[in-house]
Length: 132
Image (cartoon, rainbow, N blue to C red):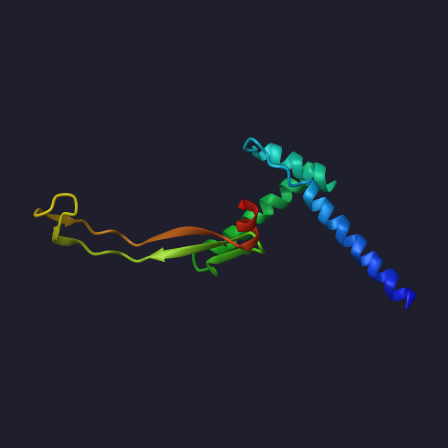
């Protein structure tokens, strides 16, 4: 029984340390960081060199590109934070004699639009909670 109690205490202490570390770094930042400032912040908080942090971010960009580009999966998820999708919008044909919404009674012509690919970034649960 004594072993179970000490393991519970150890587990609760580790939870306290993890939550206090998370609370410690959640102070609001008053100005937008540049890339260098982001690298410095991550480097200081993780004891990883600035060069290594830069390499990780560059590799993340490459991985996202490989997911999003043509003939790829078209979707990348950064777990808990965001989802990036490439969405293909189909071509729209030209339309003639369509009522003008800005000038009732007049007719207008709408030119055709070519098909295009757009990138959508969707926030996930953790990112939404950060904003609250």
